[in-house]
Length: 425
Image (cartoon, rainbow, N blue to C red; front, side, top):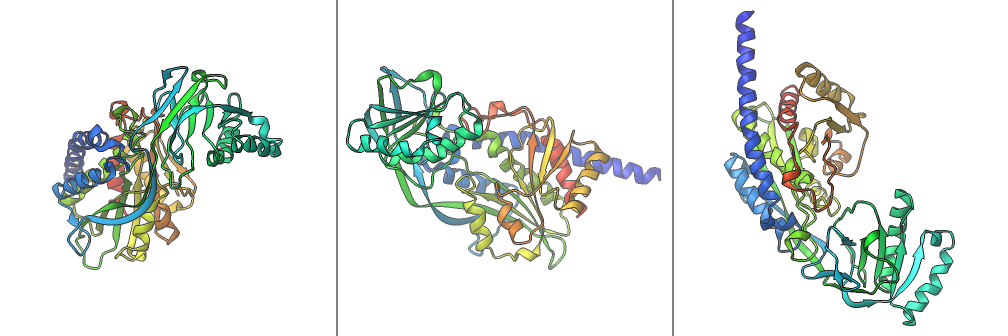
């Protein structure tokens, strides 16, 4: 009995040492993915494909085999995406505002430049939507050329609805929305005729002199790439365990470094964890084949993962389990497991491992969602968890989601928990 306990203790110590050594490597990978040279891993300056090239090299170093028949790690696909490759400017009373901090531009904005002469709107327009028609007519008749929408004091849900409903005014003229809330940006798949801005309320009023300049370019059939690596299992005809994470992010507005969105927690951190998993399972093969997929196009609407599911050489029924990793840079409060509420047996197993080992403060279950790359696999019947960490880092889709803001508080323990889970499947 003593001998068995000693062996188990030594094995666990070796595992801990291996995992611990991966954390520094994960930090390095995350920092590079967040660096200025990759421009937010989006569609300005080809940042997303530069990140793909970097990951292919990391896959090779980790001992992964190219997944596709042409001995390539890459699975290309195309998408239409709206970009802002040059100036994105807004000046109030002669003072230039700072993109990403004082304002953001709606991802579907069109381009243009000039001085704004406003028609004023506020939330009361929702009670009398017919009043929009004469306002639009005034712009068409050139009595004014822009819309100023005051969102101050409305609820979060109403603010989101107003932005969604009224940004279509960008078909007729430039639009300013004001807000005191945190900015969150996204990727646009279409383009309005005119610019649409979201501006901090304390930086602008409808009576100010406002000048704007936006360069917007709709990229048709932009080629992006999933990065896919493979490790064979010990057994022939084995099922496959899949680790996924999206490596793309939002890119930026214009060419100034300060206006790029680094995407450290979302999702450079999860991408780094793919490499940690690959390093471990290269040295500790299981009975399962292991597939590691870094998806592009997640921020544009799960484009890369949908393409993979629809065009993959692997049959979905041959996948034993999928673990999708997103937002892995914190974890002080534990993790949330999407699909944990519906895949009860595997969630119970995951939670039992955590309770036994004492890895994380909490393993919280959640129901089904459609907001990450597990979704299309799960729709095809693949047992899938989407896991993200919970903690104090609230930076999301903003310019403050930087490498320096990450604590990696639970990184070691999430890695160990996932390894234990896979080995007990």
